[in-house]
Each structure stands twice: as structure tokens, then as C-alpha cells.
Image (cartoon, rainbow, N blue to C red; front, side):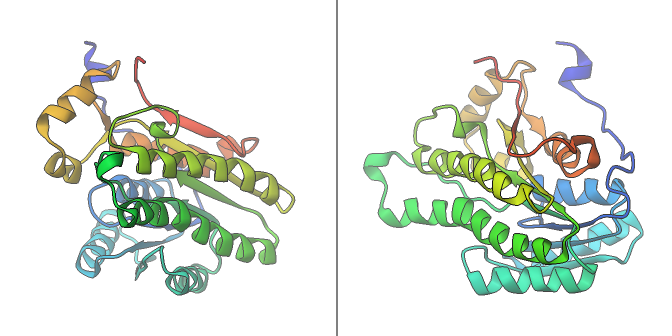
Length: 265
């Protein structure tokens, strides 16, 4: 395997988001959300608000972003995207701190592993409420703000290749992510009339510490073996595609879902 594809070199920022403001949900920790926040700062955004449901993790992530970027234009706000009041409070907070949100990245999602015959309604509903309904709540209120301002905006949703492809014991998560894809396409048509673009990324396998800790090693090896490069994506590789969709490089794209995958089948 070519070392360039097996062990990719980190790609530095190129000023793609210079002067823009960014809001990202579920961005504390070591996953895609924090990688997107790090990349947004590297790409020159003028300010960022990140949210999470864990206070301690959120505070550490805000401090890390400030240290990495050398900027004090970083804020954190607790938010459970299943709660409409918290969603509105988060967006209101970001609007005030940033002087208006230019880019929203809906990263919040929840997945578990369970066969349908063993699944309770509560587990099904929780996964869909965070992953699909949470994306809807954030988008609905953010679009109201963007429409009122009248200067456009961008929304990037985090979907998954499981919205297209089958995997055992993932019916709830796959249904939620397929919903995010359909939601992205439909809302993009509605938002186009007031200059807001809405797109999504669909990662296949993004490897981060929390995944390595929670997923069985045999399962990870099996999933990695399905990838053409023999590995999962680094979280910053997914974040790079989010930055592309958030930037003017994708100015003619809306309602699209980009696969971030090297899957062979």
C-alpha cells in the first residue's frame, strides 16, 4: 500500500473560511466535531462557538482551541439537541457572540449497536431524536436567523454512508442518517431562495479514540479491511471535506451529500 494513502500527511489550512463565523454542535472531545472546529480556526474563521452535552469536556476543548489558534474568539455553550429550548439558546448565544453565524455544522449524532429484534422503542427513538431530529431543530432555528439577516449562509450536516449501505445491527442509526440525507436535499431547496446552501458529508469509517475504546477490535479490523486504503479516515480528513462545503469553493453546490469513503463495495 502506498504510504501516501496509508499514512497521509496532515493538510494545513488555506484560509478557506477567512472572515467567517462558525457554530458546531457536539464539537468537544476527539471526534469529527472537534477536528472540524480545529480546521475552521486554521482556515481563518473570525470566531467560533462549539457545543456539547459535557461541561468538563467542553471547557477543555474551548481552552485547547484558544491555545492552538492563539485567538480568544472561541466560546462554548452546553446544548442537548433533543431540547428545543437549549437549541434556541445555543443559536441565540452564538448569534450574539459572533455577530451572526455564517456557517453551521450539524455534527451531533448518536449511534448504538443493536439487532432490531432486541431493540426497545426507547433506543430507536433516542438515536433518531439526537441524530435526525436534532439536525432538524438546529437547522430550523438557524434558517430563521439567516433569513432575517438576508446575507446568506451555509449549513453542513454530518450523515453517514450507512444512509446508503446496509450493516447489521445498525437499522436505527442507518435510518437516522438516511433521514439526514433526505432532509438535506429538501431543506436545500427551501433555503436556496434566501441564499443559504445546505450540504452534507457521509463518512464511512472515521477512526478516533472514543471509537477505538468502544468498538470491539475485531469489528474495527473488519471495517478497515473493507476500505480501499486498508484504514479508516482520520477525523481531520472528514473535517477537510466539511471545510470545502462550508467555503466558497462549493458555491454552486446545495442539496448534495458527499461520501468521504474509500470503500470498495
